Length: 276
Image 1 (cartoon, rainbow, N blue to C red):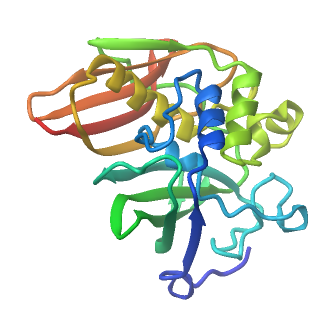
Image 2 (cartoon, helix red, strand yellow):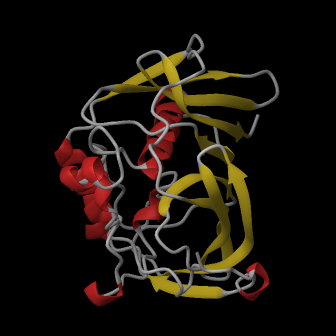
């Protein structure tokens, strides 16, 4: 396995401009079965993940459908890539139909020893800017794990919810979300690859989509509350087409605990803070 010098990757930058196209925003909405904001409207929570995408030609993709490592992100040999979690600050709305910019920096690279082998954690900081204003600032945690059977069983019982929405992640939904986010990772739409190569029992629901649906359920339940920040993490994958629920409960300190559960046990968790 290649020896990695974290110091040579920390601080590496990538910038990308986008005009937050009205037509593409409508396609993001359709992938989530949601209403689309029009020209000048506020972009819903986490929809920036379907925009500002630096897409690459086929010859720069790996066997898993992701961009080859060693460009912006550090190389990780034949390890499998997963979206582990992140933290997002919502400072002001991005507006549909207006130009914006994503400025990204590799903030941390750390290798750890897990129960199933070595894990490479990469934290990327993304700032989304429109005009002269910083609108969204986030950190994404990406983990590369050595090939091993994925953790599928939940160990934490889902708590009692104050609100809950059911989701049926059929293959068409996963394909559409892959398309609008230009996510080529084959575990989301190529079942033979997902089962035979990466060891999942079926297609895998996108971590970003789960986080987006958790936030959407909060907004549906509390349309009057202004969301300030979100911290989220994945505990285990959700497998399609089994239904799952996105749910939550208010805390006493101006925050809400959100989760996604399947079969009664937790798969994703998040803490959302809002303006009291």
